[in-house]
Every structure is written in structure tokens, then in C-alpha cells.
Length: 311
Image (cartoon, rainbow, N blue to C red; front, side, top):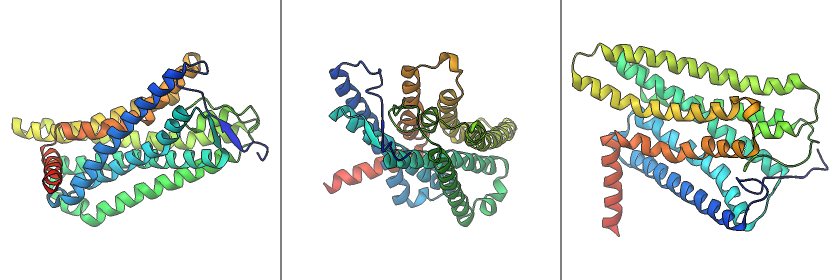
């Protein structure tokens, strides 16, 4: 690995032969998405932190989710914007390893948090009498800490295993950021079992969380259908639908990016999918959660108006 101190990223999202004016277009596109993500998630974090009436389990986990979204954006987008603006493509080996670790860390924590948030919805709707016990402040802190610690351990093991493989199949990455599948393509190791092990560990963790989410929502919908009043239905669905939409967006984009058949794989498609699952969800999550949440909207509006009044 010592002769290869840097890796080369693709010239742009449209391939090697891209017009110079598209570089500026891609920069503006990434700038707009990153600003939207920073603004939306920053407002959610500030509103939940400053609004004492929002200090509930649901908004506590939402604050943690916003932090992971900011982490994902800050890990991948700045380097890509630098490449588009200054027409550079290289990334150091250590920089690539750091990018893999932090991206996997934040993505893993986000998935674990979405699973924990599903448990929060399940307890609130199916076992409301036990909310104080099962979703107390200490229990929520422990679950959030477990999600962050599990994401750190998962990212550390994945990064260490990936970068311990010798890379000799060229130095060109097929992504706008360093990602494990693209790095494994550069490996000349004959240890296929080890490479499969890296993929299957992550797949099994994701599958366990997915099964838990599906089982929880089956129980939730069964409980909601037993609610006699239409107002109760509306309240339950307004609580669950934003979370279900975020989970669906997260799983659909990530699953298609990693599980698509090799026959339909192409550099341009891989690059487009990498943007879809790594950049778009962090920008859309704040919008999804604020659409049907009057408490959050009121807190954000109060925060904005208070800021302008001080000005």
C-alpha cells in the first residue's frame, strides 16, 4: 500500500469527458443541497435545544438524527465541492480512510437512531402507560449512546478491514467520495471470504434493524386501527408518517445503490446513486419532519422571529 499515497476520484458526475461549465453547475448544485441541509438540520437542533416543551423522547432522537445528517453532509460534500471548483481529483490515502470512517459512522448511527425512533413510536402508541418507564430520560440517553457507540464500532471495524487489503487495481475511484464498494474493486487480494465478510456484517446488522422496524410498524398499525376516534387516527399517523417516510427514503436509496444487479451498473449510474443516498436524505429529512409537526414548526418559527427581533 505504501507506493499508493493517493487515490483519484472521477472528473465529475457525468464521467471523465465533461465540459468545464458543468463543473460550476455541479458545484452550485452541491452548494445548494448542502446549504439546505445545514439550514434545515441546524434549525431543528436549535429549536429542540432551546424549546423546553420539545424535550421529549421523540424530539430528543430527532435532534440526534439531525446531528448525523449534518455529519454526513460535512463528510462528503466539501471535498466534492473543492474538486468541482478547483478542478482537482486526488485525495490522500489517509483522507480517503477518514472519509470512509466518518461517512460509515454517521450513516450507521442514523440507521440505528431510526430503529430506536421506531421503538419510541411503538411504545407511545402500543404501550402508552409504560412511556414513563420505557422512555424515561435515562433510558433515552442510554439508547442514543448505544446508537452512537454501535455506529463508531461498526465504522471502525469496516474501515480497518477495508484498508488492510492491498490495492493494486489502479487508483481511480468510481465515486465523488471514498466508499467501501469502490475501494474493494481496487483490491488485488485473493481473500474473497474476507471481502464477503465485510459486506455481510453490515448486511446482517441492516437486516436485523429492518426486521425490527417492520415488526414494530405492524404492531403500530394494528393498534391504530383499534382506535375508535378519527382524531386519534390523525394524531397517531401524523406522528408515524414522517418517520416512516424518512426510513423509506433512507432504505430505498441505500438498498438500490448497494443491491442493484451488476448488469445495470455503470459509472454514471453509480455516481448518481451515490448522490441520491448520501446527500439527498440529509437535505430532505428536516423538510419531511416539519411538514406535519405543528410543535416543531411553531418552535422553528419562534426561533426565526426571535432572531430577527434581536437584529
